[in-house]
Length: 169
Image (cartoon, rainbow, N blue to C red):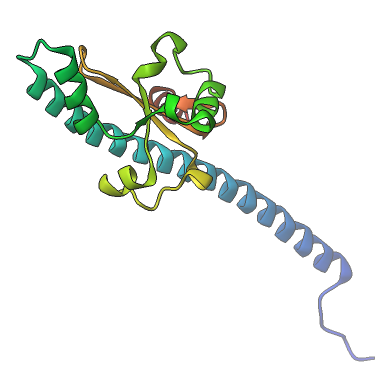
């Protein structure tokens, strides 16, 4: 009788099981990398928004340094600070308040960026359907910009929270 050469059923089964294990590990790692990339993308966009908004804030601070008339100061803010007050759009205001990161006593200090503002900042590819709204709080006295995203990432909405989450991962 001739000796038959080939793979046994047991060897084939073991090979398939090993391949399934490797595929599942690869899928898990790939999904984790995708999550990290989304977090990094959101943080990067929020940092770019913060940097550009800081320029606008510095311009307001410079122009209003010697002003005492509140009406003039408010006019400079309207001209220089980008975005619309969230109180002007109930949908945005609700989305912003749902984050739990809006100080309702200072609600008039929060602005949301429209598509035109994002395009002016060089971030025209961001849209509210995919990324949610970007909310800014201009703190002129302390020269700080608070950036909040209404979609967030795993229950984190502010830039500070997302950066901290990024360091932990």
